[in-house]
Amino acid sequence: MITRLRSLYLECVTAALLTATALGLTLHPLSADEASKRVVAVGGSVTEVVFALKEEYRLVARDSTSVHPQEAHDLPDIGYIRALSPEGVLSVDPDLLLMLDGSGPQETVDVLEKSGIAIANVPNEFTPEGIVAKIRTVGSALGVPEKADALAQKIEADLKTAQEQAAGRNDNVRVLFVLSTRGGRIMAGGADTAADGIITLAGAKNAVSEFSGYKQLSDEAILSAMPDIVLMMDREGDHSASADDLFSHPALAQTPAGKANRLLKMPGDYLLGFGPRTADAIQDLAQNLSEIRS
Image (cartoon, rainbow, N blue to C red):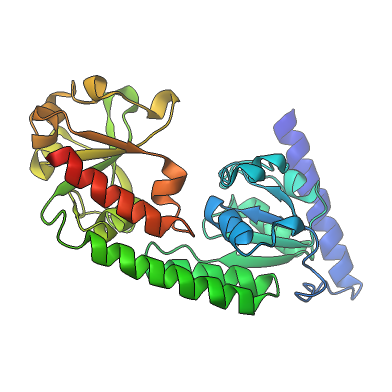
């Protein structure tokens, strides 16, 4: 019933927009000055950038991945970044959407694009350059490019320092990032992921960089990867695992990480966010990797 009502809602919204177009009522995104008083931030790092720019007073909502800083919790939650609904987004009457690349589903994005609300698509590359581009994109959309430029320069310098300090500390350390162990199956992060990006910036080596994205590993792939350390997000539920649980896996138990019981956990939004706090995350990860092997 709920699915049917949602479908009817989407059909009505789309029909109304098409009718407006047929009548010559072209819908244009508002300018930055006009469309920046009721802002919705989608993506934890996007919300962090808005706060870092000290423009948080314009936020009227955020998505469920936006958990930092603590003040963000006071904002209405419109849902998970990849499971947004038009109803949830439109319910807060926004005039600007800051949407991190990968927001969805596409069905929702299509409706929002036709609604006339200004949308800024924020890039999400897992590099220092990607973080700078993210800051500048958000700043431009909010109409504060000068503030964004100042923040970008500071963050760029912090990232450079963090990389310099991490250099040489974890050469040849093979790190396996495990996203999930649900059902006893190991889901790991390969190339072109936030996990791969942060491991590389911390001066270590991703143990499974032969594929892109997140994939389940066979026992043979785990043994071939031979990780020295397993890295996970510190969280609860089905995606969590203790060191005892993790290394009871027959293949992982035979790796250097398993034999030495080396499991490192860090908060996911901090570790993988690629935003204003990433320089600190690089330094913390590099130090933790170095200490756990000593």
